[in-house]
Length: 316
Image (tube, rainbow, N blue to C red; front, top):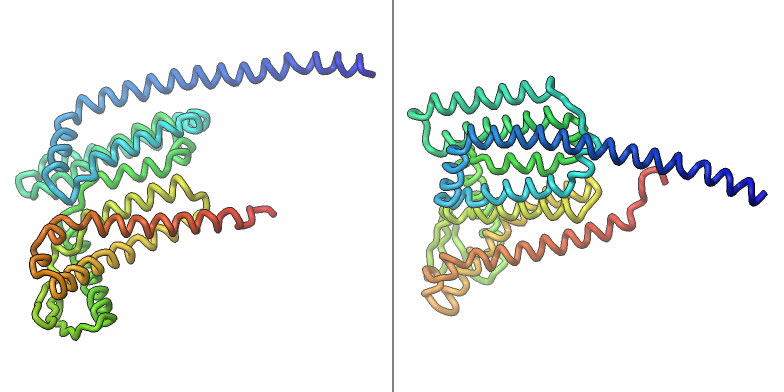
């Protein structure tokens, strides 16, 4: 019996090893051929849109609202690289799905170039960057297909955060943050022993009157908090409900951070030193409160991760 089993195992082993070797060889050939095609597309893409990408990079350095744009591109490409094994394993060519996206992206880009004299710099970059991101997405779909998109859905979606918001949309977001921050500020003042009178965005305190201006919306730190929350939830969490919880909590956390900063500055001005209202903590102290919001977000992520461990798996 032992001799028979040994013979059977010897007969099976070469076959399984050959199948594995064939699979590895096929995957390697697919990888190299597809990689060369995608590299060629990216070289052509870089030549055509290099001037616009340089313009976008300079714009992100000059405008405080979009300082994250260049970093988003690097993060997205890095995440796609870390998923390369799953990407190339599932990849299929899909020209019928990618070509319409390339066409739509080129139309957006050319429309932006045509309307540039009538658009602000912000709106011009919003339209043209939407076009070139859509073109790149179309090239990606052509080379890797819909299964490839599912393998890198998050980093591919993250690319669209590099697109500047149109001025009208940006104004609405800032107004919403300003209004919500004023509401949180009023609630926090009511919890303090100070009497407060509110009229719109203006707060009157004993010996001090402040206004929650549009600059108090902290749009840059709120965007950074949103991107950090999405990235951390993608890396640390596995369940859709836990990721959704983090994304939904980012907005109230950003608003709470703004309100807490305003109230803290007022209390320090009234009880410690009048210079706080115009000092470094006012102009450059956002990093402190951003760090506090980040610490709260981290504790929420750790709590949700523990809940995921005890959550029953599907099928059990």
